[in-house]
Image (cartoon, rainbow, N blue to C red; front, side, top):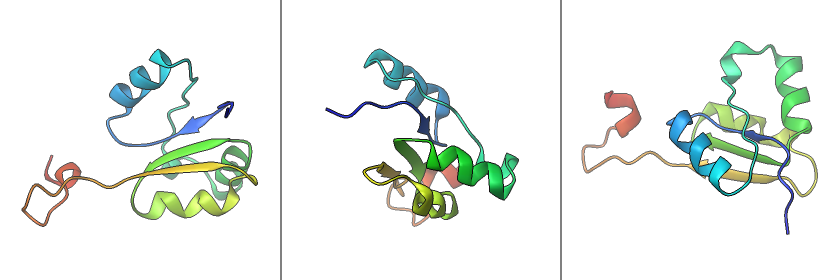
Length: 88
């Protein structure tokens, strides 16, 4: 079993947060752009799971501790070639 102490993510944050709470996890919603580099490193290095949208925010995965889990979300393109999250 994996004990999740912190979860980082960005993408439909409220819906993801509610789903994670229903299964007993304690999500922490973070916008990496609001943090300086040192705070990003500290936050990710103290997390056991990181959930992010495919792209630059996933770069911080290099700071996950050994055994840390990355869940990367790839936005739907719905056949348009443009990710749905970018069309809103």
